[in-house]
Length: 276
Image (cartoon, rainbow, N blue to C red; front, side):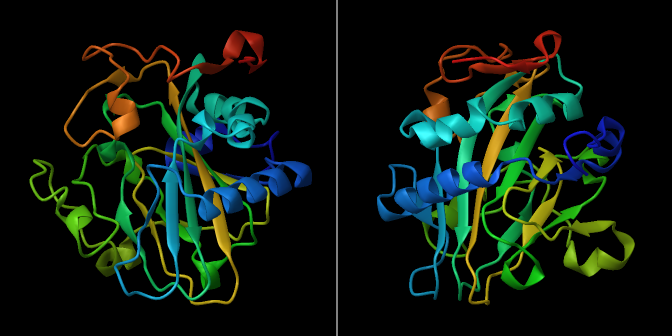
């Protein structure tokens, strides 16, 4: 699909659509350089998802938009927010946060099967990610797989640790939510989707969609940026696993998103993005 054919009906049914050419070549180059800067000088929320001593590098960082103008531009100066808003059938879209997932060549670490929304201190159905490809991506260098329709299972599953060992692996053992079923054992009965992506393509998917990815044993980079968006039905639900920057939002339980941490990027009646 392109920007004109990305269909809300497909998104509602499947929970995932691919949008070709969401970013221009110039925007890809700018954002790829920004990712490289972040990897060279990691921020306070950065970490390597690899276990200590594992080969390669699986780099993650968050909330770059608050300190880097090029990440901020990815929210304010691209069609990403408008595309997410139209797919979610939202009346307006808030910036939620951004996140780097860079899986370098020779990195065997999987991205575990998980839902994004169970990590987040919010409720609501209008939660979407625009997952931006900055390198060519396919099955050989860690393309994400999505379980189409799993956002309609009406079950929130316990968060999965992205690292097998260390303190991060112990974060979610007390979750009251049920464990995720064995997705790999059920592949034959599930609608599995994966996409070959060119730089500038995006996958837009629902916050409760089950997804995961293999490692990157190839000799090619796999740099991606996830732009997280929240629509008008999203409400604050603080919990102990909240990311530290989000915990500073200071919102009351049940409140709509508001304030400088969650600016509105797009309104349906304006048919465009809102300037900062």
